[in-house]
Amino acid sequence: MISRVRSEQLFAEALKYMPGGVNSPVRAFRAVSGQPFFVNRAKRARVWDVDGNEYLDYVGTWGPAILGHSHPRIIVAVRAAALDGTSFGIPNPFEVQLAKMICAWVPSVRKVRMCNSGTEACMSAIRLARGFTQRDKIIKFDGCYHGHADSLLVKAGSGALTFGNPDSAGVPASFTQHTIVLPFNDPEAVKAAFAANKGQVAGIIVEPVPGNAGLYLPKPGYLEFLRDVTAANSALLIFDEVMTGFRLARGGAQERFGITPDLSCFGKVIGGGLPVGAFGGRAEIMDCLAPMGPVYQAGTLSGNPLAMAAGIAALEELAASDAYTKLEQLGSALEAGMGEAAKSAGVPVHFSRCGSMFCGYFASEPVHNVAEAMKSDRARFAKYFHGMLAEGIYLAPSQFEAGFLSTAHTAADIERTVAAAARVMKTL
Image: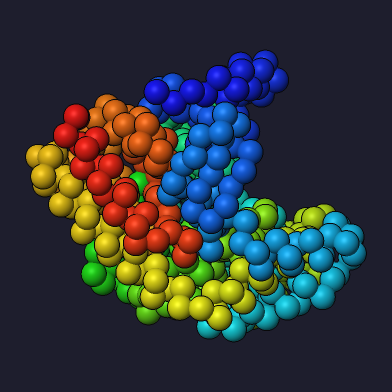
């Protein structure tokens, strides 16, 4: 039996001073019952809690740790940058270097603006799309999460979906009246929305591979359809690549699927483990931002030198290695192994994967959208989660979150995970 006495003490204390005892709802264990543990150390593909328990980690800081935790190259870069100052509020050379790297890696991005989170990136991209097109309405998809900005927190995924409250309190109806929410993977619904709102839609924002309701894939031709329908209606296509950017390929999901969006939102990997967001796209659109244009966006800590240095180091390491080949191999092995484990245990599981992102739904049918994801057996997932945790394997504490592989994971880690899953599934 794993002891978490110190974690329990910290959680009891945290409850006195922080809502729910956490600083982000997705960290809570309410969807699976129980209490979260507290971590004080992470290295490569493992984390250690304050009681000294070791876990093989498939959360990876919810995506940024594509190189594993505490990568030496990133640690050296951050330390060196910190010696010269932790923040300036003045332009610094790291900003230019990282911006050049993003533009070089993602051909659709000709100019980029740094910010501090994925939420800021998506919020700003929406404002920019509206300012550029002089239109108000935005199309998003049920279950896709684009941060907690008011106009986007409608039928969202991630923590909002986990807690069964996808429409947040505190958001006036007037703030979301221009947000059109449609089912993912349904072209006819998109066509109907454009027909009913002729000349009013500024753009579509979409996670090209939705990773905030678990993980499900676009059907063949669907992303191409979104590209075509937005172009035909003089609307912008915005890819929210906060999760998928620089993870599914050097150029993100848009490289993997061969799509060229008008605007893209980034985060996670380009922070190297530090808080970073960015959005970019066609130069004529980006030049609508202040100080060049009338669309205002600002951030005192945007382009923070520590975060920029960490992001540069992360991308340089990815460029210097066969990271994406390794991640694909690890993902393929995990997918095959989990399929065999579920089959052996006689448990219905739909395992969905794209590159180094994955999700196992306890469902008998494939999942293509949030409505199908919601049919999964959440009670069974909760038992599975705690069973895997007892095996020393940490998965996201919700059926509706993606898992992430890193280059620090090994073939032996995958074998261990599959063996543990086989044992746990037989108890469900």
